[in-house]
Amino acid sequence: MSTPKHFLTLGNLTSEEFRGIINRAIELKKLQREGVSHSRYPGKVLAMIFAKASTRTRVSFEVGMRQLGGSALFLSAADTQLGRGEPIEDTARVLSSMVDLVMIRTHQHASVERFAQYSSVPVINGLTDDFHPCQLLADMQTWFEHRGDIRGRRVVWLGDGNNMCHSYINAARLLDFELVVACPPGYEPDGGLVAANRDRVRIADNPEDAVQGADLLVTDVWASMGQEDEQQARTAAMAPYQLNRNLLDQAATDALYMHCLPAHRDEEISSDLMAEPNTVIWDEAENRLHAQKALIEFLLG
Ligand code: CP
Ligand code: NVA
Image (cartoon, rainbow, N blue to C red; front, top):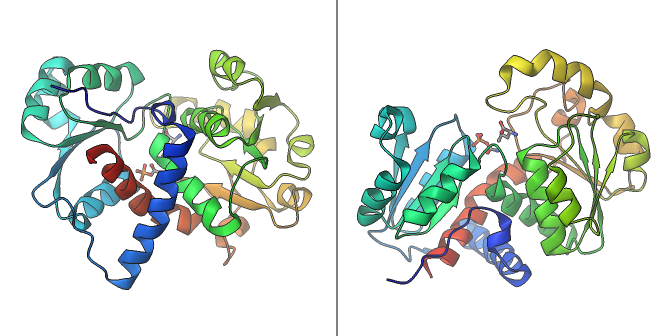
């Protein structure tokens, strides 16, 4: 049996593969808009295991599989035997003997790695505490649609050095852009990941300095799923890093800004930027559908 391709981080892709998925996502979006059928995978089934909440990830994968001719199964981790302690490796062996693809959203990144190790079909990371690679496919598709290639551009991450930030670091390496992470002390992204990408990423603690002339500003919630108890301390530390009109005005004149959603208005992003009619944030959300269909094609071949 050959080893399946997995998508646990962007590190599973080469630069060419990442660009290929973005281009195909743009094509698939067009086909979908034109009503051209692209159901290449009749009968294929994706199992989706969720140990954390989701709107976009669940709906985009489920709808995406239907548009590709297959179907998706929603499995709440808590309602499966996983929630009662069945080992991940046993679950991986059994599920992958019945379905064609597995997507997992969970806490520890090591859990998706372990699942993949024992799975005979491709495994997709639908978000862990450490990475959210599917969101980067959609964010980069959105950038390419609006601005073309991102090579050599300056992207500023504002706020928490979290799972999304880590995936931006991986994207900076693969797509060759400069990433400035503006975050308060104590909330920096993983030191090892930053060190390994020192030529692409730098940490700044002053958001105003960081955003000067930037092409893309990105933020995310200050307390991720599982960190609800830290909300107050995080809000106090990250308040100066809010993505708002003042910071946006100091970026390049045609700068874009993104947020993976769900957004907390007037916390990490101001309400006026969320209400801006031309914001690409809604494209970014829709592109989860198109980008993940391109990913599924890439993984299934
Ligand atoms: N951005 C994102 O992953 O959204 P959901 O949590 O709704 O899936
Ligand atoms: N960083 C956020 C992203 C939600 C899509 C979280 O992990 O909750």
